[in-house]
Length: 132
Image 1 (cartoon, rainbow, N blue to C red):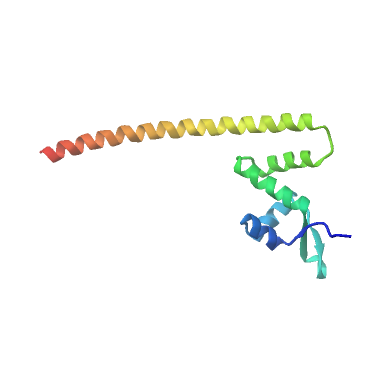
Image 2 (cartoon, rainbow, N blue to C red; image 1 turned 60 degrees about the vertical axis):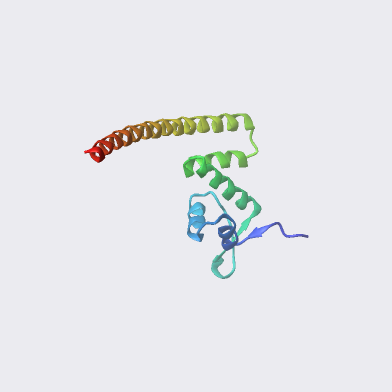
């Protein structure tokens, strides 16, 4: 019988460009649940499910979700329950993060506009100084 796909902590660290410490942190958060093997259970062995959960965690982080939000959503997808409530919850979380990012973009645009005004004033002053 073929072995299901198995990964070491180093395999996952290399594939996802993470430190082994970061992966252990995700494990502490309950996002990953590797099997333990070897003397005293020192060696972590990750399954394809752990790899998928890690991939989803990193995607959620890129979207701006907290690890707790990521875990809640991933756990929901992992469970065999109805997906309607899960999708609604996911849409709510995404809508909130979109709102936050749009707010940040508006703040950045206002800052850029302010910088442009100061640049224009400074150039005008410099032009006057150069004529003097």
